Length: 486
Image (tube, rainbow, N blue to C red; front, side, top):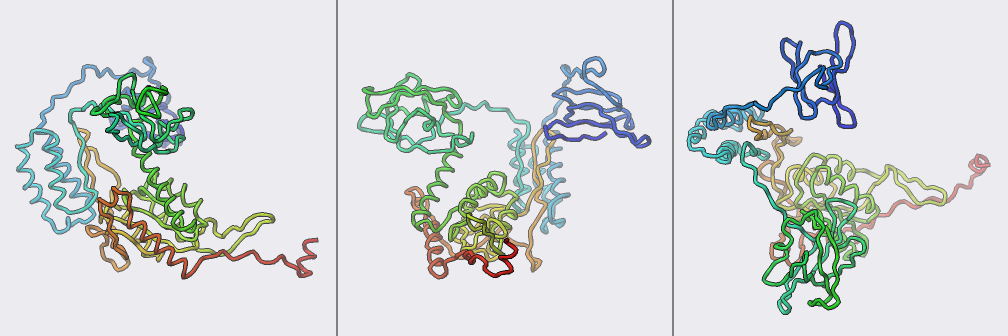
């Protein structure tokens, strides 16, 4: 039997007869299966239920052809300490068999097992076990060595609704005032700014007098009245002054998480700042990670700014991923020719080539593939690195391995080395060409010395050499070309 996927996300279970060379559908959708009895029987899962049947065509789980297993009485005797020991040994074995360096970086891995295994009798909770495994794996001194999860009590969390704004107390009136509203991108579900929805007409400086009919006064805080309101219609009483005179009520839907909204606001402020300081000459691109979101951010912001004379590529706080190669390839494009259309603009070959100087911003939170990006940015001579030395963790992983209780352990399997056949970056990071610190106190005040330095570097580079696309040549006038035109 074999599973085949479809664009709809539903998988089909097929059986192929090797002698008859014939493929037959067993059933769809099927989430997973196992065979037994020498390949004559199988158990499969479909829509949350399990079925045992023969391996043959048209095994419909309709209660007649194939009946679901009754698992209501299924119970398991669990001895936590024995299970914890099995999990510990499994985590140790997975590292032994999959760690990128078979010599375990010179560590006596059997000794490590014995050392930490002696602590198992004192484990009283799954989190204790996770801690011990983490300490053992930490002896390898390698990034991406994650452990966690497992059979632990679930904690029901209650969210606090967020309005996509910074609120400040007005001590003189005892009220709360809207200090700043984040603009957001309300077409993106992760960046909805509740106070900017159409028709609300809420402005910075407005006061929030009530939330769902309850007075909002100091020393109370908005979070108390927005408890468990995320995703629910909530009535706010808004006023331009700290009194009910002229106030009005609006209905908003607070969000559970406003990190995407605040991130977007930070990026747009940086882009606007760079544009203003450079009089439109320099573009700004921030890449938050090297995954899907980071690739989307790059595509969303690179192409509109590809004709800027210079670019600042910011990978500070980049959480890593796997797409740095794609972005580096795009930035490495070299202008080879031009294309001019009748009555149109000028186009480059290849398309989307940036021909001006570039600089890359890094800091100590540029991690994983966010380490690799600045390394190869410099390797390919795309520009200088400005900021602080990066995190220093590039031994990669392919995914987690589930343990018997649903926990996980990651094994660092892929390590990078340079053309000189020496391991690189791990446990050191990528050094900037120009070190610039951003003290926390300055960040809180809205100052960004690293960004300012990058802007000045690009302005200086443009003074030395301002890039220009080759202009369109004059229309051809020779008779041969004229004859062809006629």
